[in-house]
Image 1 (tube, rainbow, N blue to C red):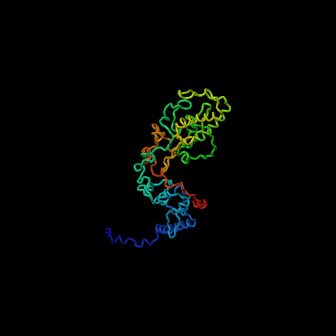
Image 2: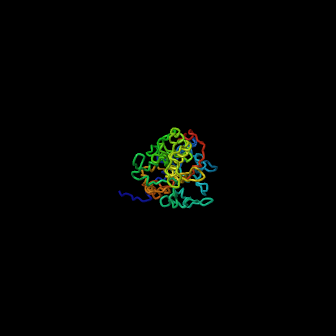
Image 3: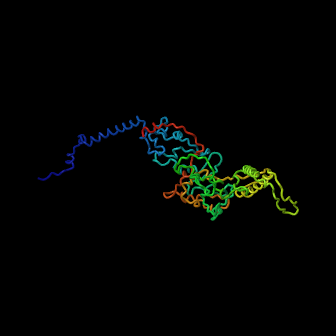
Length: 444
């Protein structure tokens, strides 16, 4: 029997147009989920609302320093009238960090969150983008008088001026007459024979403090209770300790004043040295009365009268003579070898110019010697090998820094925050704590 030909109309008659009205497991499941999930979501939100936990509104992971506040949005997002989602305000930041301004004459003050962006994971908040700095320093303007800082800094490599201490006309303000080239010579005469000085024989960070090869190590100081901290947290490792006579110079540059005494005068002011000499000779002469008989010196010019061959001095006359001879040796030779000594007719004692040794060259930037300790000193301070003048500034130039700090994955950090800080921490204000651990950790 021949099969009837199927037409479109015939096929359409087979379709059940009421199929969606018949029960089906899939449609039943879809209905249940459509009702259950919103109800669960509302219950979940209600639970967090009753528990006063704001974590569900967080825009992302908090930084490590603020992680304990993850469930307390109100700590940073201060509530504002009529606003449901308030941005983090400076008021919230200042309640814990009353950070001072950058400069009093700045014309623009960014918000805290503009530079320190939260909810981006665990990086340090101090790691700010260069644009936070260059938004002002690329075209710097201030209120009042014109700034003396460079006004067009855009980046470190290729957009930063030479360090101010190395610009034309800059000199070392120190007055100590020091020749680095001579002190770094081979077979230099030392206290016990030829020596070879190294940079760290004079220049070391304050910690760790160790014995000096060519300085006095006999100075007694009161023991100080110190807590061991990692090098990165120890400010004593960042900058070089001050160069002092006792630690760095005493062994080679003695201050002997008379063959009668082995010790030298103290490295102090002329007034202290004068009092020291008086005391030493006054204590000496009563035990050596024979030295009061002084033999006259030979006559140098025929017209001079012939002095008596021997004359007897009083103790006071002898002390005055010996003190004057010792001071002449000290002022004109020993002290003048390193210091600028000035004499005036109106005063019996000379004046010694202040040393003016610069302890920190970069007043507006940070530097840490400890993080650079793997490098040889002359890698950065190459000028010390040939420097003969005190006025020579022996700092490394910006080109030296750019060899490592140039950006990229295989280079050291070169963004602004590496060397500069925004806040003037000398003006920091005290903050009174306002949080309770029980409340902060309740929902964590």
